[in-house]
Length: 158
Image 1 (cartoon, rainbow, N blue to C red):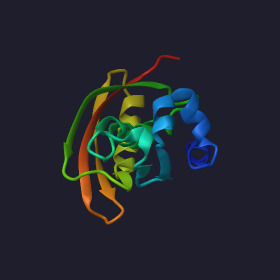
Image 2 (cartoon, rainbow, N blue to C red; image 1 turned 135 degrees about the vertical axis):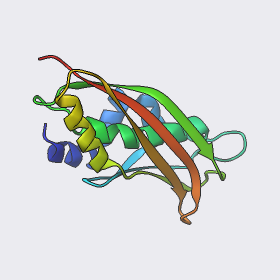
Image 3 (tube, rainbow, N blue to C red; image 1 turned 180 degrees about the horizontal axis):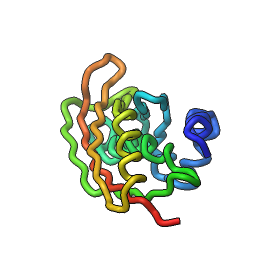
Image 4 (cartoon, one colour; image 1 turned 180 degrees about the vertical axis):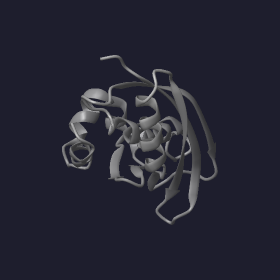
């Protein structure tokens, strides 16, 4: 599947089927894909009963799922018959600044770096890592949390 076709599917109203099948906890928590293009990937989650913590905000694990998805989709969109690679999340870090209530948007603006990274992976048999940052903002535009995800990618043999 091409990048364009993958993006079209990820942004369609039926992407919940993919989440339901492959990432059921993200589906239950209400994670949605908001934007996926050549610049960035945005996911969002709304505060709901199913993803709350005892302090009446979004549970940190639900926030991690939305943030991780924004980085993972940037990588997954490059997978096709010609670019077969494995990917593994090897490290995460997070810093929480405010209570996450209402609608929270997770933005990873590193699509161009991911494209260069995948080109390096495909031109070599060694594994490479890439660190992808994510910023979470609430509906007021205030930063709620910061995440870093380190992905290891390695070319698969044909």
